[in-house]
Image (cartoon, rainbow, N blue to C red; front, side, top):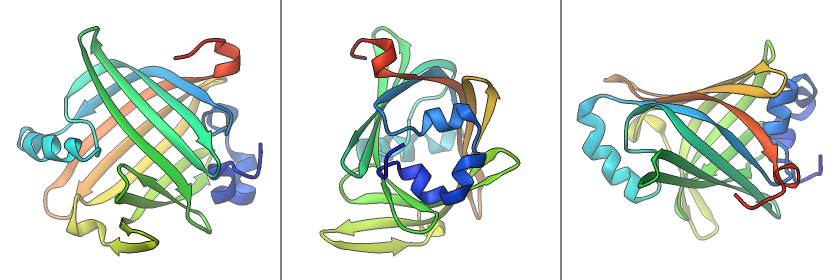
Length: 200
């Protein structure tokens, strides 16, 4: 792993206690996660999600066991994620973001040039836990923090190895007034592009 590995920098010594499947998931070599994803949210969230998706945030269609690919590439100190959810050949949804190291045990995921979410990470009992800290509004070199409760609520992600080469992930948004308003979860296998031997 190079010094550009974002997750390794955020976890520090905890990186070594991260199971193999998760280390593969967070490698800085170009790779693709292949698996199934389920997306759920209350009906009243549909219109807010439609608007948010226009700005690059979150997925705005429900489904169970959706075939999903997450292509990841490194450019300098930034890792780009390009997610493709394939409901069928004619119906695909895309969700792009990029990650940057934010110091200490924190990372920022940007869903567009202006808006991101700062999260802290730690390893406990061989599971990787994310906790949302605050949203980030980026104006040039200025990064303005916005409390989570002012927007969508608190973000949590839990990832764990389920076999030697597979991991499961569970992303949730919990609003202080409305409770859980969004979730996506699934299981994946990470394939380096050099192994797959083709463009995805």
